Image (cartoon, rainbow, N blue to C red):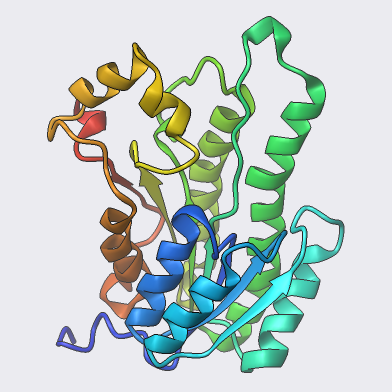
Amino acid sequence: MFDSNSFSLKGKVALITGGARGLGKYYSFALSMYGADIFVVSRTEAGWDEVKKAVEDHGQEVAFLKKDITEEGAAAEIIKAVVARFGKLDILVNNAGMQLRNKVLDFKDEDWRKVINLNLNALYYLSHEVAKQMVKQHHGKIINIGSMQAYRAGKYIFPYTASKHAVLGLTKAYADALAPDNIQVNALAPGYILTDMTRSLQQDPVRGPEIKEHIPSGNWGVPENLMGPMVFLASQASDYVTGVMLPVDGGYLLR
Protein backbone atom coordinates (compact mmCIF):
# COMPACT_ATOMS: atom_id res chain seq x y z
CA MET A 1 0.00 0.00 0.00
CA PHE A 2 1.37 3.39 -0.99
CA ASP A 3 0.94 6.23 1.48
CA SER A 4 2.81 9.19 2.93
CA ASN A 5 5.10 6.83 4.84
CA SER A 6 6.29 4.95 1.76
CA PHE A 7 9.49 7.00 1.62
CA SER A 8 10.14 6.84 5.35
CA LEU A 9 13.34 5.15 6.48
CA LYS A 10 12.49 5.32 10.17
CA GLY A 11 14.05 2.40 12.02
CA LYS A 12 16.37 1.52 9.13
CA VAL A 13 20.15 1.23 9.26
CA ALA A 14 22.26 2.26 6.27
CA LEU A 15 25.91 1.44 5.61
CA ILE A 16 27.55 3.89 3.20
CA THR A 17 31.09 3.37 1.96
CA GLY A 18 32.89 6.66 1.51
CA GLY A 19 29.88 8.27 3.12
CA ALA A 20 31.63 11.33 4.55
CA ARG A 21 33.00 13.00 1.44
CA GLY A 22 32.00 13.85 -2.12
CA LEU A 23 28.64 12.49 -3.20
CA GLY A 24 28.76 10.00 -0.34
CA LYS A 25 28.09 12.64 2.30
CA TYR A 26 24.95 13.70 0.42
CA TYR A 27 23.72 10.11 0.54
CA SER A 28 24.32 10.17 4.31
CA PHE A 29 22.42 13.45 4.57
CA ALA A 30 19.51 12.19 2.47
CA LEU A 31 18.99 8.83 4.19
CA SER A 32 19.26 10.30 7.68
CA MET A 33 16.84 13.08 6.72
CA TYR A 34 14.22 10.40 6.08
CA GLY A 35 14.89 8.55 9.32
CA ALA A 36 17.77 6.11 8.80
CA ASP A 37 20.65 5.64 11.20
CA ILE A 38 23.96 5.85 9.35
CA PHE A 39 27.16 3.81 9.50
CA VAL A 40 30.01 5.33 7.49
CA VAL A 41 33.15 3.44 6.56
CA SER A 42 36.00 5.41 5.01
CA ARG A 43 39.76 5.22 4.62
CA THR A 44 40.31 8.50 6.51
CA GLU A 45 38.38 10.57 9.05
CA ALA A 46 37.93 13.46 6.61
CA GLY A 47 34.38 14.81 6.71
CA TRP A 48 33.32 12.86 9.77
CA ASP A 49 32.50 15.92 11.88
CA GLU A 50 30.28 17.45 9.19
CA VAL A 51 28.37 14.21 8.64
CA LYS A 52 28.01 13.58 12.38
CA LYS A 53 26.46 16.99 12.90
CA ALA A 54 24.10 16.66 9.94
CA VAL A 55 22.88 13.17 10.85
CA GLU A 56 22.37 14.07 14.50
CA ASP A 57 20.57 17.28 13.50
CA HIS A 58 18.14 14.98 11.66
CA GLY A 59 17.58 13.14 14.93
CA GLN A 60 19.42 10.00 13.88
CA GLU A 61 22.41 8.05 15.16
CA VAL A 62 25.69 7.78 13.28
CA ALA A 63 28.77 5.61 13.66
CA PHE A 64 32.08 5.59 11.82
CA LEU A 65 34.74 3.01 10.99
CA LYS A 66 38.15 3.93 9.59
CA LYS A 67 38.95 1.11 7.21
CA ASP A 68 40.41 0.46 3.77
CA ILE A 69 37.61 -1.56 2.20
CA THR A 70 40.01 -3.16 -0.30
CA GLU A 71 41.87 -5.03 2.46
CA GLU A 72 41.42 -8.80 2.59
CA GLY A 73 38.66 -9.69 5.05
CA ALA A 74 37.45 -6.07 5.29
CA ALA A 75 33.88 -6.85 4.18
CA ALA A 76 33.19 -9.35 6.95
CA GLU A 77 34.76 -7.04 9.53
CA ILE A 78 32.64 -4.10 8.39
CA ILE A 79 29.33 -5.97 8.39
CA LYS A 80 30.13 -7.42 11.83
CA ALA A 81 30.81 -3.89 13.13
CA VAL A 82 27.51 -2.53 11.76
CA VAL A 83 25.45 -5.36 13.27
CA ALA A 84 27.30 -5.06 16.58
CA ARG A 85 26.48 -1.34 16.71
CA PHE A 86 22.91 -1.32 15.41
CA GLY A 87 21.72 -4.93 15.56
CA LYS A 88 20.88 -5.17 11.86
CA LEU A 89 21.61 -3.72 8.43
CA ASP A 90 18.84 -2.70 6.03
CA ILE A 91 20.59 -0.64 3.34
CA LEU A 92 24.02 -0.92 1.75
CA VAL A 93 25.24 1.93 -0.44
CA ASN A 94 28.36 0.91 -2.37
CA ASN A 95 29.57 4.43 -2.99
CA ALA A 96 33.36 4.43 -2.53
CA GLY A 97 35.22 4.75 -5.79
CA MET A 98 38.12 6.32 -7.63
CA GLN A 99 39.12 7.36 -11.13
CA LEU A 100 42.59 7.55 -12.69
CA ARG A 101 43.27 8.99 -16.15
CA ASN A 102 45.98 8.36 -18.71
CA LYS A 103 46.55 7.75 -22.41
CA VAL A 104 46.02 4.17 -23.56
CA LEU A 105 49.65 3.23 -24.10
CA ASP A 106 50.80 4.97 -20.92
CA PHE A 107 48.28 3.42 -18.56
CA LYS A 108 50.01 1.64 -15.68
CA ASP A 109 49.13 -1.85 -14.47
CA GLU A 110 49.22 -0.67 -10.86
CA ASP A 111 46.61 2.01 -11.61
CA TRP A 112 44.37 -0.60 -13.24
CA ARG A 113 44.59 -2.75 -10.10
CA LYS A 114 43.90 0.18 -7.73
CA VAL A 115 40.71 1.19 -9.51
CA ILE A 116 39.38 -2.34 -10.04
CA ASN A 117 40.09 -3.30 -6.43
CA LEU A 118 38.10 -0.37 -5.06
CA ASN A 119 35.35 0.14 -7.63
CA LEU A 120 34.58 -3.50 -8.36
CA ASN A 121 36.20 -6.04 -6.05
CA ALA A 122 35.37 -4.23 -2.79
CA LEU A 123 31.81 -3.67 -4.00
CA TYR A 124 31.44 -7.37 -4.79
CA TYR A 125 32.81 -8.57 -1.44
CA LEU A 126 30.66 -6.15 0.54
CA SER A 127 27.54 -7.10 -1.42
CA HIS A 128 28.31 -10.79 -0.91
CA GLU A 129 28.79 -10.35 2.83
CA VAL A 130 25.78 -8.10 3.36
CA ALA A 131 23.58 -10.51 1.41
CA LYS A 132 24.19 -13.13 4.11
CA GLN A 133 22.80 -10.73 6.72
CA MET A 134 19.88 -9.55 4.59
CA VAL A 135 18.82 -13.09 3.67
CA LYS A 136 18.54 -13.86 7.40
CA GLN A 137 16.38 -10.74 7.83
CA HIS A 138 14.39 -11.52 4.64
CA HIS A 139 14.63 -7.93 3.48
CA GLY A 140 17.18 -5.37 2.36
CA LYS A 141 18.29 -2.82 -0.19
CA ILE A 142 21.64 -2.83 -1.97
CA ILE A 143 22.33 0.37 -3.91
CA ASN A 144 25.40 0.49 -6.12
CA ILE A 145 26.83 3.68 -7.57
CA GLY A 146 27.39 3.46 -11.30
CA SER A 147 28.29 6.18 -13.78
CA MET A 148 27.72 7.44 -17.28
CA GLN A 149 30.73 5.20 -18.00
CA ALA A 150 28.51 2.18 -17.40
CA TYR A 151 27.07 3.05 -20.83
CA ARG A 152 29.90 4.86 -22.60
CA ALA A 153 33.57 4.40 -23.50
CA GLY A 154 35.74 6.78 -21.47
CA LYS A 155 38.91 6.41 -23.52
CA TYR A 156 41.25 7.80 -20.86
CA ILE A 157 39.75 6.03 -17.84
CA PHE A 158 39.90 2.35 -18.83
CA PRO A 159 39.62 0.66 -15.41
CA TYR A 160 36.93 3.09 -14.30
CA THR A 161 34.87 2.35 -17.41
CA ALA A 162 35.40 -1.39 -17.05
CA SER A 163 34.46 -1.31 -13.38
CA LYS A 164 31.25 0.66 -13.95
CA HIS A 165 30.15 -1.63 -16.79
CA ALA A 166 30.75 -4.50 -14.36
CA VAL A 167 28.76 -2.76 -11.62
CA LEU A 168 25.76 -2.70 -13.96
CA GLY A 169 26.16 -6.43 -14.60
CA LEU A 170 26.59 -7.26 -10.92
CA THR A 171 23.54 -5.17 -10.04
CA LYS A 172 21.41 -7.25 -12.42
CA ALA A 173 22.89 -10.58 -11.31
CA TYR A 174 22.47 -9.88 -7.60
CA ALA A 175 18.96 -8.51 -8.15
CA ASP A 176 17.95 -11.75 -9.85
CA ALA A 177 19.60 -13.97 -7.24
CA LEU A 178 18.27 -12.14 -4.17
CA ALA A 179 14.74 -11.26 -5.29
CA PRO A 180 13.21 -14.40 -3.66
CA ASP A 181 14.57 -13.15 -0.32
CA ASN A 182 12.83 -9.75 -0.63
CA ILE A 183 16.10 -7.94 -1.30
CA GLN A 184 16.15 -5.29 -4.00
CA VAL A 185 19.41 -4.48 -5.75
CA ASN A 186 19.59 -1.31 -7.83
CA ALA A 187 22.07 1.37 -8.82
CA LEU A 188 22.33 5.08 -9.44
CA ALA A 189 24.28 6.39 -12.41
CA PRO A 190 25.21 10.00 -11.67
CA GLY A 191 25.61 12.16 -14.72
CA TYR A 192 28.08 15.01 -14.90
CA ILE A 193 27.86 16.39 -11.37
CA LEU A 194 29.80 19.34 -9.95
CA THR A 195 32.22 17.54 -7.60
CA ASP A 196 35.95 17.45 -6.92
CA MET A 197 36.26 14.29 -9.05
CA THR A 198 34.96 16.11 -12.12
CA ARG A 199 36.81 19.38 -11.51
CA SER A 200 39.39 18.72 -14.23
CA LEU A 201 36.60 18.12 -16.74
CA GLN A 202 34.72 21.21 -15.63
CA GLN A 203 37.84 23.31 -16.21
CA ASP A 204 38.86 21.65 -19.47
CA PRO A 205 38.47 24.35 -22.17
CA VAL A 206 37.27 21.80 -24.73
CA ARG A 207 35.48 19.02 -22.83
CA GLY A 208 33.80 21.31 -20.29
CA PRO A 209 31.70 23.20 -22.84
CA GLU A 210 31.13 20.01 -24.88
CA ILE A 211 29.62 18.21 -21.90
CA LYS A 212 27.43 21.16 -20.96
CA GLU A 213 26.13 21.43 -24.52
CA HIS A 214 25.41 17.68 -24.62
CA ILE A 215 23.10 17.89 -21.58
CA PRO A 216 19.54 18.79 -22.69
CA SER A 217 19.01 20.97 -19.63
CA GLY A 218 22.22 22.83 -20.44
CA ASN A 219 23.60 22.51 -16.94
CA TRP A 220 25.84 20.21 -14.97
CA GLY A 221 24.10 18.55 -12.04
CA VAL A 222 24.65 19.29 -8.37
CA PRO A 223 24.99 16.66 -5.62
CA GLU A 224 21.54 17.45 -4.23
CA ASN A 225 20.02 16.11 -7.48
CA LEU A 226 20.95 12.59 -6.34
CA MET A 227 19.38 12.75 -2.89
CA GLY A 228 15.77 12.11 -3.94
CA PRO A 229 16.59 9.11 -6.17
CA MET A 230 18.72 7.66 -3.35
CA VAL A 231 15.84 7.91 -0.87
CA PHE A 232 13.50 6.30 -3.40
CA LEU A 233 15.77 3.29 -3.96
CA ALA A 234 16.34 2.88 -0.21
CA SER A 235 12.66 3.04 0.75
CA GLN A 236 9.67 0.73 0.41
CA ALA A 237 8.44 2.97 -2.41
CA SER A 238 10.85 1.00 -4.64
CA ASP A 239 10.00 -2.50 -3.35
CA TYR A 240 8.92 -3.62 -6.84
CA VAL A 241 11.97 -2.10 -8.54
CA THR A 242 15.07 -4.29 -8.85
CA GLY A 243 17.98 -4.78 -11.23
CA VAL A 244 17.81 -1.20 -12.48
CA MET A 245 20.57 1.36 -12.91
CA LEU A 246 18.82 4.73 -12.76
CA PRO A 247 20.61 7.52 -14.66
CA VAL A 248 20.42 10.88 -12.90
CA ASP A 249 21.97 12.83 -15.72
CA GLY A 250 19.74 15.69 -16.86
CA GLY A 251 19.09 13.70 -20.03
CA TYR A 252 22.74 13.30 -21.03
CA LEU A 253 22.20 9.76 -22.36
CA LEU A 254 19.40 10.92 -24.65
CA ARG A 255 21.90 12.33 -27.12
